[in-house]
Image 1 (spheres, rainbow, N blue to C red):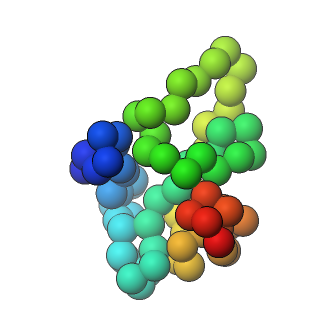
Image 2: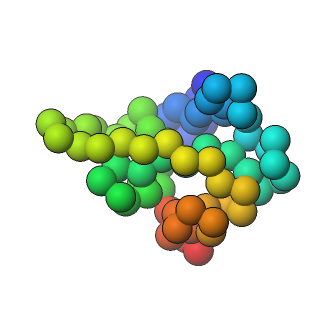
Amino acid sequence: MEHMYNSAYIEGINNLYEFDCGEQSGWMYSVNGWFPNYGCSRYQLKDGDVVEWVYTCTLGKDVDGSRAIGG
């Protein structure tokens, strides 16, 4: 875990790390199907929220998360 911009960034899960599948690859998270555009440690979870970690190879385009990075 790396701390960037005053929040946590997950570099790897289960031996799959950022950049393992190219320079645009890494982990993203969604909450209730929405990809926040800030670090996971800054998100305030509420009861019933569903958090999902997904691995992207194309800065979120392949997992429908490109909106989180302004795409």
